[in-house]
Length: 401
Image (cartoon, rainbow, N blue to C red):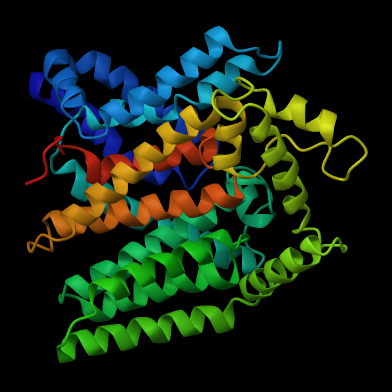
């Protein structure tokens, strides 16, 4: 009974990736169950030791301290303050997750994540055939429903990228692995209702491509195969290609004072937000102040009802100043350094290269997503990334040998 109790948190944690493909309430319920299991399991001393010795603990705690400083000494609005402060604590959940330490649960979690991606792809196909009912838990698969629909595309992009890496590393069940990858990738390209997931997959594929740039016929075949996949994605994803080209045209039009597209109105938000950052660059305006400050400056503009700048870096710089932005970049930079340090190791299948590539894919996805979405401000995105980051990060100490 004691052994079952001790292993309950990691069992629940290994199942949490599946909850990401369903309504937010399912994920939240799973996280609450994990926290309760942690209390029930005990062994608090070892859990605390794992947190203290983890490579990301100091950067994460630093970000929280900057947010507490802003909460105590800077002005904040009467509404939205507590939820705004809460968003800046998202990374603390990662510390809670990694306190369980390394173990077999990490391998199970990856398999569960892949299973979730297959289920999500199947639901998209069923919706294409008009066989999916328009009601929970399938709403986000049937119609575009904001951040949850964006998250589904991001998850499929990450899963496809990870499957591609697994395909290049393992030689068993090759045809099955190819079929599963194509099954998920087709759903991502043609049916998912966001282009961010396509961009993330391309980024993941480039990472895999970078790893295989070496002189051997196997590498040449792997590189050629990945290039073909990237070309197919680019030629097939009309919405992605149209949007990227549109972004270039919008930047040109905006710089010349001409009219921009609906996507281009973000440039207006970025410009006004950058002016807000310049007013208080070091400490920022305070927790949850962006919306009020922006709406005052954008009164009468088409963007005056926006609730976020759709850019995490500008949001952090506006509310927490360069201190907060620096703390965020410290975390992301540490993740990247750790990822590429681990990726140099030779034991590729179950060793550190696998963990390093996974961390790199997740980190670059967060950095890319943060340019266009509120990846860390919105718990829909933030907690999902914390669950996935816990898989490769659990068990890593400050010194990587």
